[in-house]
Amino acid sequence: MSKGFNVPPVVFPSGGNPGQSGTLQRRPTAPFQPRQSTNPIPFMSFDIGSATTSFPAPQFGSGSSSKSISNFDDEPPLLEELGINTKQIWNKTTSILNPFRVAKPNLHEEADLSGPVLLVMAFGLFQLLAGKIHFGIILGWVTVSALFVYVVFNMLAGRNGTLDLYRCVSLIGYCMLPMVMLSALSLFLPQGGFAISAVAAVFVMWSTRVCTTLLVQVATWDEHPGLVAYACFLIYTLFSLLVVF
Image (cartoon, rainbow, N blue to C red):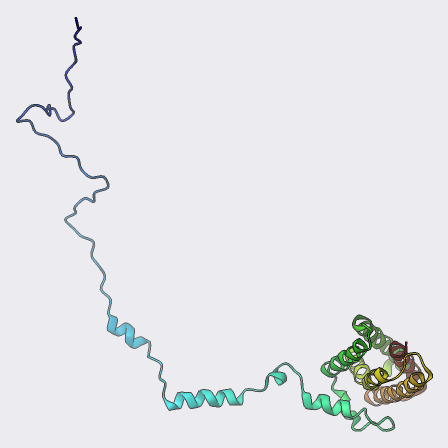
């Protein structure tokens, strides 16, 4: 025999039983439903005509194009903006080709490093073709040589010394042209022989004479040119040893 249980009646919050008829039921509202307002948000109106007239449209007429082309033609070359004067570099380099007389020594009064860097890199490139990697050694020796000549010259000149370090690096670099020619010529001569040693001595004397002449003329001091020439001779002898051996 089954035993019955008394189930209590279910009471809904709306106050009515869904099973009973005639009772009012509350409909559930959707969450986050915006409330209706009697005063809607007013929107600002923009004057599109005034906004478009304030920014004039670009004109692609013949006048604007010709003006832009003329401005482009008036711009200086890129090398000139970088401070590289190829004509001046060429004139300074060719002025060293005469070992007995330096043509136009006034060219070297304005120092630059573009030409010396090219000559030093060319010297290292010819050494590389000979199987010698000396780029770091060459750059280090040029720096030490410039400091050496700068100290020696200003100690000899005293208060009359007007040679600065930047100009000293420029002069030593341009006078590396005979060393570059020696490095190129060494590719066709046997290494360590008498022939290349004799040729190296000639090119060392060439670089020494030209560098001494330029230092004396540019710095306007010629009391002890022999001592200046001895310092230059030591420098270019050092570079020639890289070529000979």
